[in-house]
Length: 99
Image 1 (cartoon, rainbow, N blue to C red):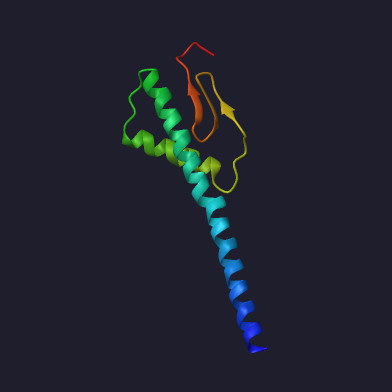
Image 2: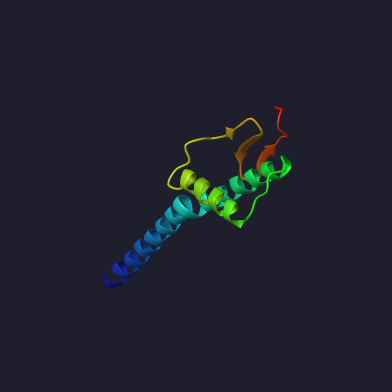
Protein backbone atom coordinates (compact mmCIF):
# COMPACT_ATOMS: atom_id res chain seq x y z
CA UNK A 1 0.00 0.00 0.00
CA UNK A 2 2.84 2.33 0.83
CA UNK A 3 4.48 1.75 -2.58
CA UNK A 4 1.18 2.50 -4.30
CA UNK A 5 0.86 5.84 -2.50
CA UNK A 6 4.44 6.78 -3.39
CA UNK A 7 3.86 5.93 -7.06
CA UNK A 8 0.59 7.88 -7.12
CA UNK A 9 2.36 10.84 -5.52
CA UNK A 10 5.12 10.72 -8.11
CA UNK A 11 2.55 10.40 -10.91
CA UNK A 12 0.43 13.27 -9.60
CA UNK A 13 3.49 15.49 -9.11
CA UNK A 14 4.66 14.72 -12.65
CA UNK A 15 1.23 15.51 -14.04
CA UNK A 16 1.02 18.74 -12.04
CA UNK A 17 4.48 19.78 -13.24
CA UNK A 18 3.55 19.03 -16.87
CA UNK A 19 0.38 21.13 -16.58
CA UNK A 20 2.33 24.00 -14.99
CA UNK A 21 4.96 23.93 -17.75
CA UNK A 22 2.23 23.82 -20.41
CA UNK A 23 0.43 26.82 -18.88
CA UNK A 24 3.64 28.85 -18.65
CA UNK A 25 4.37 28.02 -22.29
CA UNK A 26 0.88 28.91 -23.52
CA UNK A 27 0.31 31.98 -21.36
CA UNK A 28 3.75 33.63 -21.32
CA UNK A 29 6.46 32.11 -23.53
CA UNK A 30 4.59 31.65 -26.83
CA UNK A 31 3.07 35.17 -26.65
CA UNK A 32 6.66 36.42 -26.15
CA UNK A 33 7.70 34.66 -29.39
CA UNK A 34 4.67 36.09 -31.22
CA UNK A 35 5.40 39.59 -29.89
CA UNK A 36 8.99 39.33 -31.13
CA UNK A 37 7.70 38.31 -34.58
CA UNK A 38 5.18 41.17 -34.66
CA UNK A 39 7.87 43.62 -33.52
CA UNK A 40 10.26 42.44 -36.24
CA UNK A 41 7.52 42.87 -38.82
CA UNK A 42 6.67 46.37 -37.55
CA UNK A 43 10.32 47.42 -37.60
CA UNK A 44 10.74 46.02 -41.14
CA UNK A 45 7.73 48.07 -42.24
CA UNK A 46 9.19 51.20 -40.65
CA UNK A 47 12.58 50.61 -42.31
CA UNK A 48 10.98 49.95 -45.71
CA UNK A 49 9.17 53.27 -45.55
CA UNK A 50 12.25 55.24 -44.40
CA UNK A 51 11.31 55.76 -40.76
CA UNK A 52 13.97 55.69 -38.07
CA UNK A 53 13.49 53.01 -35.44
CA UNK A 54 15.59 53.25 -32.31
CA UNK A 55 15.77 51.12 -29.21
CA UNK A 56 12.97 53.03 -27.48
CA UNK A 57 10.66 52.55 -30.47
CA UNK A 58 11.51 48.86 -30.58
CA UNK A 59 10.78 48.42 -26.88
CA UNK A 60 7.48 50.29 -27.16
CA UNK A 61 6.42 48.16 -30.10
CA UNK A 62 7.38 44.98 -28.23
CA UNK A 63 5.45 46.00 -25.11
CA UNK A 64 2.42 46.92 -27.21
CA UNK A 65 2.44 43.60 -29.11
CA UNK A 66 3.16 41.53 -25.99
CA UNK A 67 0.23 43.17 -24.21
CA UNK A 68 -1.92 42.31 -27.23
CA UNK A 69 -0.91 38.64 -27.30
CA UNK A 70 -0.41 37.69 -23.64
CA UNK A 71 -3.12 35.49 -22.07
CA UNK A 72 -4.87 35.05 -25.44
CA UNK A 73 -4.39 36.46 -28.90
CA UNK A 74 -7.65 37.87 -30.23
CA UNK A 75 -6.84 37.43 -33.92
CA UNK A 76 -5.71 34.72 -36.32
CA UNK A 77 -4.20 37.14 -38.81
CA UNK A 78 -3.81 40.88 -38.62
CA UNK A 79 -3.12 43.35 -41.41
CA UNK A 80 -2.89 46.99 -42.23
CA UNK A 81 -2.31 49.04 -45.34
CA UNK A 82 1.39 48.17 -45.50
CA UNK A 83 1.79 44.82 -43.76
CA UNK A 84 0.17 41.47 -43.03
CA UNK A 85 0.96 39.06 -40.17
CA UNK A 86 -0.41 35.50 -40.16
CA UNK A 87 1.89 33.83 -37.67
CA UNK A 88 5.44 33.56 -36.42
CA UNK A 89 7.65 33.85 -39.49
CA UNK A 90 4.64 34.32 -41.81
CA UNK A 91 4.48 38.08 -42.35
CA UNK A 92 4.86 40.46 -45.27
CA UNK A 93 5.53 44.18 -45.54
CA UNK A 94 4.71 46.38 -48.51
CA UNK A 95 5.86 49.79 -49.62
CA UNK A 96 3.27 52.47 -48.86
CA UNK A 97 0.66 52.63 -51.60
CA UNK A 98 0.78 48.90 -52.44
CA UNK A 99 -1.58 46.17 -51.31
